Length: 530
Image (cartoon, rainbow, N blue to C red; front, side, top):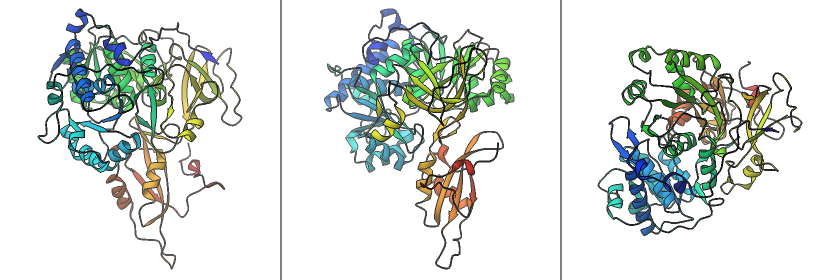
């Protein structure tokens, strides 16, 4: 077992609302909390707290309280933060929904989470409202953060002027959020994260990144994703930074906002790093305010990391996280250059790590010098999830005896004190930082009348990005003749039914999907040789 090298931090025993807004001073109340990057619109910490309280009061008047779940689907705008914390302040649980989801995917998550309400924006209403209605929610149970003339609006709810309710919850047990993740394998599952989980992880990273009062930080990574939720939103607000939101990534807007808002800290995923390293547009903007960039959501190679930090003249570090870890377990701290840029650094405070041999289940020996053998990384700490919603089988496969969580990632440990992720034990495909579960796509392909069997694996594209590739067995007729089916038809079929990042990017027709005697798909036989 390898403990964190950092001194322990105190974890307050309260809700995430109490952590962020409970001790708001008069000075902090006057600070700018959020800036909408596209428009420059600002909101102070005092005004934000007032909106959160008013929304909580309005929700409580509609019967929302502890035990209730509200779905939230919106891009990164200041109102997302109001909605998120208003839900939690009312004592309810937020299940954040990917803004690229189709109506069917929205409905599926609402049903799985047992959500009683949906909060969204008019720009996403086509899928959000259709999905909410498909899941059985009526007009008054669908709230718009802007106006659509049909559903209740945020402005209307805030205008009711209702005080927030008195809520008595156990932060150790009460669910704050219910994001959906594929975990180590399989279809999306509701991850049960308590208030204590979110409070703990916010406090665990508080001294590792250079965000403080008034420091402008860039929030382009989606807040519906646990990375954006904890590291950009909650951590940024807790540190009293200026959180500059971006509804979507556009390189020119991204660079303009760094220049105009004098951004000091930015948070990215590897595809953004590639653009920052190579795109000529970067040289047209002044980015000298940047002091730190943190890359997460997927591994970033050391060469690209060095190219970005050299070109922009700032530190670039990596971290490791999972939805099940709230999400950060490892992080290369700002201002400490002993950790290679290709590594994920050491465990954050209060985190213990061990590497386990996937073949034997034995702990891998910690070396006195150099790198350890590779093993599956197991993590223990106060940010580990409570479990998967209504899925004891998946919970038992992920949460081990002694409080350990299996990450499904293969890593090595260097005696210098850092970890490097080298492979993935899990089958999950990471496309542009998003999780793409093969099992979900395979199930969808098998619904096609002309497909007899299918397997999906991640393969490298010409650009080096991992993409979903389908291996398809055509359905045969009575004479054994395979159905007429093209690769384009297969890709169009999937694209019409899933979010854009889940689309099949390549198709190969095969005679038979390789499987074990127990029926498990042998994906390694379908992947290209290294």
